[in-house]
Length: 236
Image 1 (cartoon, rainbow, N blue to C red):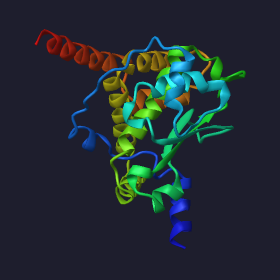
Image 2 (image 1 turned 180 degrees about the vertical axis):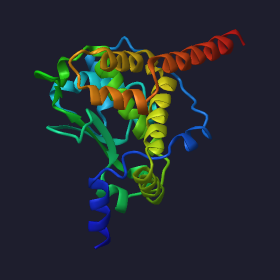
Image 3 (image 1 turned 90 degrees about the horizontal axis):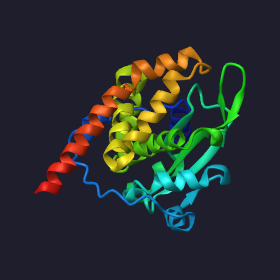
């Protein structure tokens, strides 16, 4: 019965968004950015414990190459027809959340098979590379944030999300922050600009992005701050 109750809770996405900035602000992200002019054969090493549709395999592996902490983490990339008003969602797998340690927890990233525009639906893999890389990188930022959280902690924050949109916004900021810290800042900006400037994306989706997510300008400021810190480190 407990399992069924938890499964119902997670199925309506309680788990997806939570107050993550509280934890992010307490952690110093130590990043050794990988070198990224890599061949497809080089990227295959990032496929450990990953299930990825062929259509997005190369771009997903490239995104994974920015997150060394996820190298052995089990992640299934799954195409879906509809994800409740979202394009992508990252979440722990129910079974591993309940019965595995956080070190052995598995995750899934749901990805809309088609991006719904006002007059057509386009295959997700046809988006510009930098846009799709930023989008997937954002979802990997969520998983990076999930890694050290207990099952109880994830459920607790899920309930908080149900009570307030503030937690949704903080979770998205945390995911973007991780992605920027790991070197995907310019791609995150490309994704935001693509959404906000696309004349055929639904206005209600654009409003959601404007209201609950960091703006391209805010992310650019974060990228500049990261670059300044790197310059200071190099000088020392």
